[in-house]
Length: 246
Image 1 (cartoon, one colour):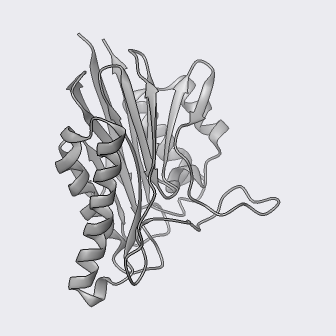
Image 2 (spheres, one colour):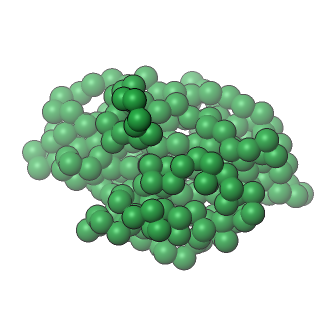
Image 3 (cartoon, helix red, strand yellow):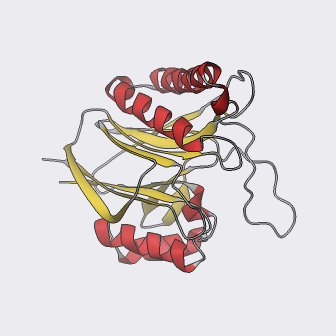
């Protein structure tokens, strides 16, 4: 019988004094806290299963509140996110919820978060993001990006930027978002990496690919985290590795 294994971890990195990332795996959330040891959850394949990360925006207040609010809303809505329209609706609900929470508490004004994830259906994958957290697919041909970064164009010589062109929340008053949502085929043997930019900024994609060619599940999650730490660990690191097996 096919199954989906999800291995995840979340860590503050070496330079940040707390973790503003949050994580969703089905009904399970990890909000603005740490698990240095990779945790693996196994689910029956075929029911809608949402796996997502939310990265609270640094340099603005209460990023951890925005990411946790987004993660818990997505976890609650996950079983209903069974087509592109439902995914867009869920992300718009999250955006309204972040702004509503900020309206109720002036100390939360302008809090915001990015989000990226995937909903696994029987033979279909719904990929979504707002901001620069990423969803990548690992195949025999290599590691490819399925999400679309909401970032300004890079200057010559730049590989990354901390700037984003849209997020959930992140402004003093409400701004609507246009989520990126796409549909892709899904089959036994597929592998995904869902992660915040605390992994992809310090570690180039070819280095991530090399690790994923060698390792899987818990060992792969550990090695990816280790690579980000050895690259300086400049930001919170949150990742989920998804594998469809049988």
